[in-house]
Structures are given as structure tokens and as C-alpha cells.
Image 1 (cartoon, rainbow, N blue to C red):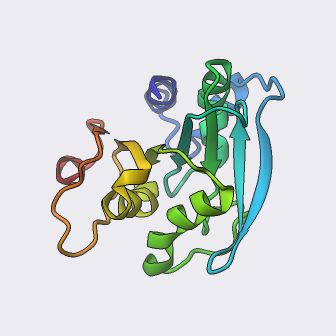
Image 2 (spheres, one colour):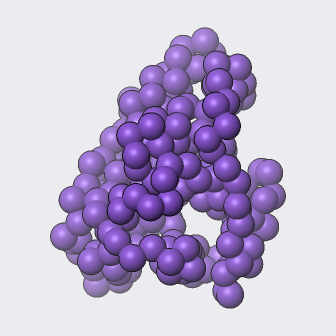
Image 3 (tube, rainbow, N blue to C red):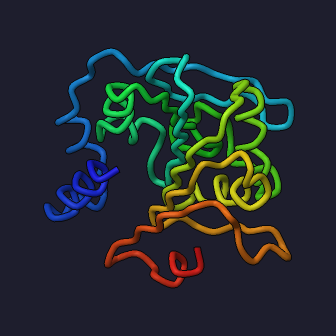
Length: 191
């Protein structure tokens, strides 16, 4: 996670707002341990995702990217590789509406609220999952944390949007909320 923050900070300091991924792609060394797969979800269509780490692990971290990024962002900052090296299974979802189009067009807010739970069920995961959401990824991750807290080991918000169900004021899931100087602190403080 810190790798992501440092990489983005380094990219921004050079004034590269228009294409943050170029410096990350340039520095990433692909060791061949991250793979791409797809799952077909009844109400969501085919969802593409990257994954790494031992399938036998009882620990899973699922990453949700922001609007201008993709699942590959979590790969090129080295996060998926580092977790695999630590024996932790990791998955980075390609959210519908991503620029690369791998998981189809953007879906309604109602569909996005149920995407994460449907994905975890179809993946066949039987343990609790750590959810890491950046920006728009919070629209997918936060409903899961509020509605299915018994399945969430924790929630990491990287300036993530919050989409809590009506009537839900708190969640018992441990959370780490991170935001930068250029992010909207109000959004993160609400999380």
C-alpha cells in the first residue's frame, strides 16, 4: 500500500497529472506471478480480475481501483507481487466502466453495491477478506463492509468514496482511512 502512495506521489511531483501510469509502468518489473482471470456473475456480466499468491492461503486481500486507474495499477506499484511473496492471496478487480473495458460498461450504483459480495461468493471464498478501495472503488467496497461485516476482516480506504446503506451509521469492521493533501478530506472523514 505504501508503495502505491509513494509511486503516485513521485509521479505527481513531476507534474504528470495527465498520465500517472507511465512512470509506474516504466519502473515495474513483471516477474510473471500475477495472472488475469474472469468470473461470470449473473447480474454483473463477466468481471475480469488480476490475482497472485497461493490459492491455498486463508488470507485474501481484494483491491478496488479508482476511476482513472485499473486493476493493473495495483500490479505495477508492486502490491500484488509483495503480497504473493508474503504468502497472501490477492485479487484486483477490474471494475465495470474502466477505460480498458475488460469488465464491460459502467453499471448503475445499485448494481455496483452488490458487485463485491457477488464476486466473493462466485470466487468461492470461505474466509474473511480485507477490502482495499481507492476513490471510486469505495462505491463497491463500502457497501460490503456495512452489509456483510462478518465477512470483512478490515477495510482500507485510500480517499475512497463512501456508499453506506440508509440507516447504517457505523460498521464493526476495523478500518484504516488514508487521504492526501489534494483529496477531499470531508469524504475521507465521513468514512
